[in-house]
Amino acid sequence: MPNKSTVERAREDLREGKSPTTAAGEFVHEEMEHIRRGKHGARSPKQAIAIGLSKARRAGVPLKPPKRGQAKERTRRSAERAYEVGQGKRKPRAPSRRRGRAVSRALKRESRSAASRGALSRQAKSAASRRRTRSRTGRKSRSRASRKR
Image (cartoon, rainbow, N blue to C red; front, side, top):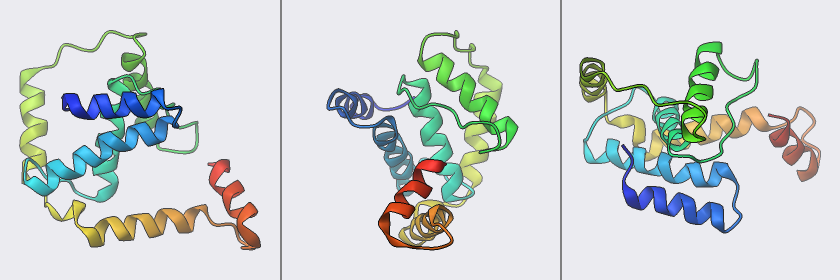
């Protein structure tokens, strides 16, 4: 369950006309704080980001799920369900106490280093390198490569 202030910040971003990814960034930021403060851990920065994006979708941020071929099918379907819940097109499943507790315990066992500066820096650099084009001719091709995904 995201903090009220996080949801409010995200709504404010959307009201200001910022993109859904910017609004979802508030949830990712919150998730990183949870890991840093020791609420739970994550296996990798990518997992922490995924948890934040899922929370954002469920909270109603109109962040579209990835298209076919952009993510694993299971991830894509999960994102689709979260998106539908957030948009009111699907009823949220009644949370099973047993499963919820299992997820919490599993995350608590994970390392806290996923939200460290170094780990996030590596994640950002690798994501940026995947967006770059082969030719590297100017900024236009770089921004186009970013939009392509």
